[in-house]
Image (cartoon, rainbow, N blue to C red; front, side, top):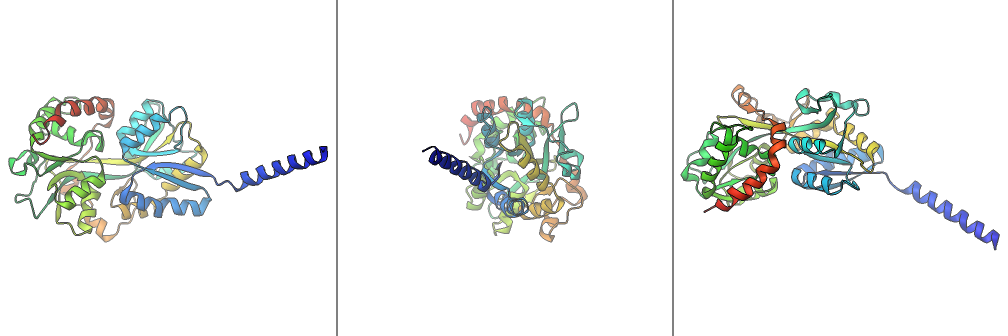
Length: 349
């Protein structure tokens, strides 16, 4: 009996060892869906898995979904790498929910331009932009008779019912900030923006909460003019939708999609390996060309189609605008509440 029990115990230990050996290391990543996800799988996840043997498990959503998941899982994190916009990255760091990105552990951080490295006062890097995009106007050329040239053109009555807008919960509240800026306000003085948005709201035909919604509304013709991200317009053009892009005269905000390491992540070492892989120049080059975005590093070669689409003329580059992300991150929750309270009830009225 004792011999049999010893044998069973040995077999159990052996089976546990085999099971542990066969278990594949996993890195869990929260990122965007759509064409960005397609490129992430092809140009990042699959090559990384092949090179390292570490499996990448993806979940999808907008930045607002990423920040919500990280907060909800604070006591028991399930995500290793959370991708989001820079204002969300700032917020999570200030809430103590993300971990530092150490150049000694992630040497490819050195590939990034300084503007893409977000640091605390002591120099600690906590968020990095992998690629950027321009926030611009897009319009249906078959429906809009007078092409817009300015953010202020959105307020023209001729566009009544044809306009779609994003809420401040996405795109870093950039449309709300631009509404303030073009009316004499700023990130620290949003009142002119809120007054302008109240006047605009009755002319708005739709609100979109994701890139895919923006794409579908323009593609279907349910909306004819909107502030969107550069790659949305490029995707529409690629698929034969009659749209045109406009770099507004007051400036086009440029922003980042970037990377955070979740504090208490299930697999921090695997996550650092993945982040380092993501910041290889050849990986970034493949991803930005597939997803029609702007790399956060120099020396990237573009396809002819993307090179043509990027803001390359002196006039377009001069109109690129950087907004105050720290101030936006500090006030964004209040702005979302105010939008819901004061603007949403006026939409389409």
